[in-house]
Image (tube, rainbow, N blue to C red; front, top):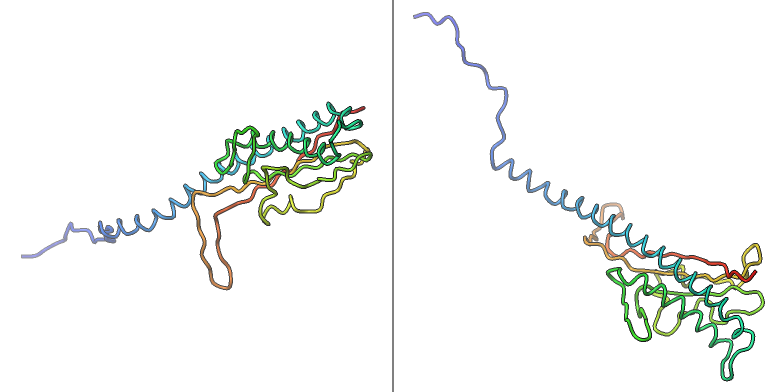
Length: 213
């Protein structure tokens, strides 16, 4: 018998086995999870930054309005009041406003009081810039608040009590907040490199002019 030809086609390659596919999927799961958590954390930190910006603006405005409203007390303090007591009151107004605005943040330590306080987060520092009266408590947190740890470098940096370039009196507020990511990652890489994802310290500063013109 003579065979003229064959209809069989050569096999180009093999389909991956079920075990191989499962192995590849198992390798991809952690990568996909990290990407998903990174996207979620980016959205959360962006939202927190917006809240912080709103809080610092509200605090500076509240303190500036209080400073303007209490001009008579500032120039003629009541019996038993000192200049330090007066500025402590202005700082408290700013701190309370910041605390109330930032209370929705996950790490905020809001206590409704009275008095309203945020003992840990956000950290708050205030300074009144007035050429005629020096804020002796400039940059010092009021009672019930803190300047935060060393990571809050903006709050512990040098403060100036000078007015702005146009000689306007204004109130300056600085805030610091510890944002904790969902996914904590900390490991070393070759050649001294490494990856560390965990706590992020968001720092904001704002100023509001005292409209005494």
